[in-house]
Amino acid sequence: MMKYAMGLLILALLPVLPPALADDNPLPAAVESGDLLEDVIKQDQQAVEALSLYPPEVREAIFRVAASPDGVVRTTGIQARSSAAFVGLLSGLSQEEQKSFWDVSRYPDLIDQLVAGGGKSDDMITAILVSWPTEIREAARSCAADHFDILVQGRQVRTAAEQAFDAAIADYPAETREAYRRLVGMPEVFTLLNENMSMTVLVGSLYRQDPEALKARIEDLGLEAARKNAEALEDWKRELEENPEALEELKASAEEFAVEYGADADTVSAPVSQTRINVVVEPYPYWYGYPYWYPYPYWYPYPYYYYWGYYYGPGDGIVIWGPPSYYYTWWYYRHPYHHYRYPHLSDTFLRHHQRHRDVKNGFNDVVGRWKTDTGQRMGQDWMKDDGRRAERLKEYGRFERDDSTEARGMAGKSISRSDDLKTNSGRYPGLQKPAGRKRTDTGVTQPPSGLQGAPPQSRLELPSPPTPPAEGKVVVGKPNDDQKFSRAKDHHKSGWSRTARPPANNRGNSRR
Figure 1 (cartoon, rainbow, N blue to C red):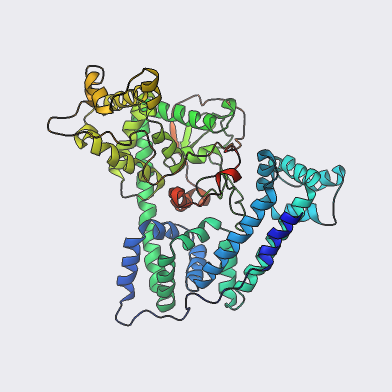
Figure 2 (cartoon, helix red, strand yellow; figure 1 turned 45 degrees about the vertical axis):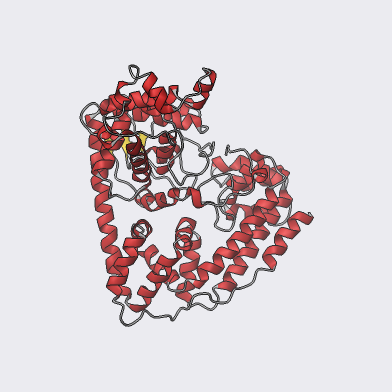
């Protein structure tokens, strides 16, 4: 109990920080707002483009918050303390029990019902849960029946954070306070503003100086980004239709990804009963953060097909709604043997990146890094799209598999990679260096630069029983708003290396 009380005491002592950034700091008269905005876009293009893809009412909230950025600093400090207090409450529980609390935390109104009036019998808990989603009932029952005191204290942590937050923004106009509350409910947006503070301050200054000009330029930027995304999506669909081998390899690799990260193999290829689906996923609350065992910003526990960029439709085949995500693409390139197993897909990835490399998303981020790193070793001619690239990629994947440190050690070898290639030149003819070009021995089996740690072993629930689609036809589904703005959320999947993680002895198993 002392440990839990200390967590609450931390929040009770939270100061309301003095303004760190002045609200009335105008731009120098000599600076043209349009020129400054273009500089902001150039320096933080991915972040600004991410913001531009949200609907107008969210963008308005973003501008209002950016115009009073000192509140972002204060709010972030409150969140850091409340998150640490919540993690401390759960530290004595098993990984599975912690998972239950994190899942239930996404439903604060449910927690309020379970806590109100004190502990409850099984029948009383059942009566409350009947009106809540079936997928959360077992976790909620476990928390309420087995760890009611932690449920109560977790609610107190949230309440304390909300009270400190209200005090931190109390002096702002009503519209600004409402904007702050809205964005705290969209934690990925608030995190983006905090992680790109220079952009936030400048955008806020531009909003105070000429709000209509700022809105018009950001609207134009969003339309341009949406146009590029739409063109890339149509091209991605066409590439898969024209290359059935790549399509089959995408499906096979996606199922491998899902099974590796906890899905039941019998549910991965499940069709849905409609041609379009709407997935509403409650985020983890901002005041608690996302589960600490994830090494990247993971606010929304999406179903697996969110990461693949498609889902199985009823009989017509798969419905493509976007390119593969950063999460899946990083997993794919992290294992070089994927190029051996799925060479046509690797070839298609490179072709799509070449055609749409100016689209800012997680897929292009990973493919571009891999292409640059590998091109420096193998030579750009080796990457040429000459009709034989898939064969070279397959050979590359086979060499990387055979040449792994473990394989060389088991074979009693102690030679460099370059010497290994020379010794086995007949076995890997497509990997021999071109005349006059020097090959290095660095980093082939490591993740792209800037990424730390392996993706989490997570389990995300999939609906419906399995039945593969009868046809291989690809259908483009019109994305709903949540899917459309996933381009912005994909920005946060690129921030793995910036994510602070607790000490190793405080991490649970990486399985969710």
